[in-house]
Image (cartoon, rainbow, N blue to C red):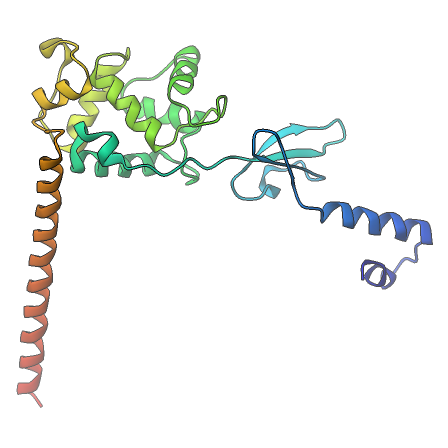
Length: 244
């Protein structure tokens, strides 16, 4: 099929050229080879990042401009409410909204540029070494990926709450304003760990009862809104019948 397609080219080619073109097409159509780390690796003749498949990153660029790309592994799903109960349901939801906002390319991760802009916006600009340390401490697997997933993002604020980050005051001040909770200060309560810190200053209980109470309140508010919408629709239909 490849030969037939090339035969319609306005410039005739020799059999050798046609064979080489066909072999090149077959080579490009081969499935990606799996590396020892479990990520897909493949070579492309294009050196432009825009030509990379979704979820992939450049691994290397050859002397002739050929690009070897690798498919980045996807982080496993986790229950943020159960793993980070000190934030409460409201805090986790708000932090996810912030994470999505900071994620400039919407790939589900914060890269180096995303993290740089985020820390500047939070009033805690980082030096190159400081940013590198943050990325190393909270990066998504595998090691050396140089990007944060949502779990790493939450872990960063947990460490900030425990007073274990140089920029913890800026992060907590932003958190208090963004989530809408009482301002917190490690200097006042001391470094007692993230759980005790949030329970002492924000009033969020890590026990399952608090989570269930928040969930029930959300359900109650949703049911109330649905009932109000139902009554509004019935009143509208009743008024419409009067004008028939």
